[in-house]
Length: 149
Image 1 (cartoon, rainbow, N blue to C red):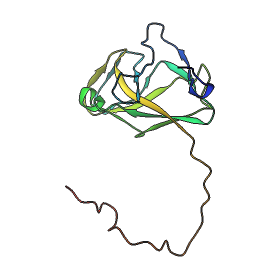
Image 2 (image 1 turned 60 degrees about the vertical axis):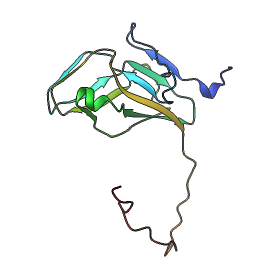
Image 3 (image 1 turned 30 degrees about the vertical axis):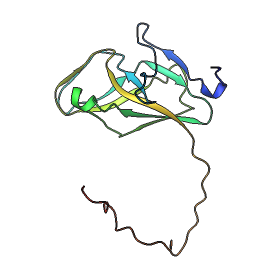
Image 4 (image 1 turned 90 degrees about the vertical axis):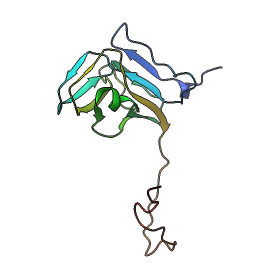
């Protein structure tokens, strides 16, 4: 398969022995990110965990970073901003990706542990906002109306 320029993400690894980015075979298209350092956290601590890489995204793309589904179970950590957004202007060698997290219990992260994941998306198109007196649609039932089951 031939790569086109829009498919290339340039990556600078700041930790020489760090595992390189790769797809996890057959398990979706999000790509795991790993801690670049050993980290001890006490319950209630906030920390920016270095992911040990800087990236240059293709023009017109942004990166979404979210916790892995097992991160809370394995480490008791939650991502403090729910989802991280990195645009293509964050692209110098000094622009190291970090993962902001909060510890709900005492925990230890080892260098190389998979703690979060990313995917890239095209920027949304330019939107135009038009004010109206009514949307003219049938109500669905209000926020949270889809029920419990």
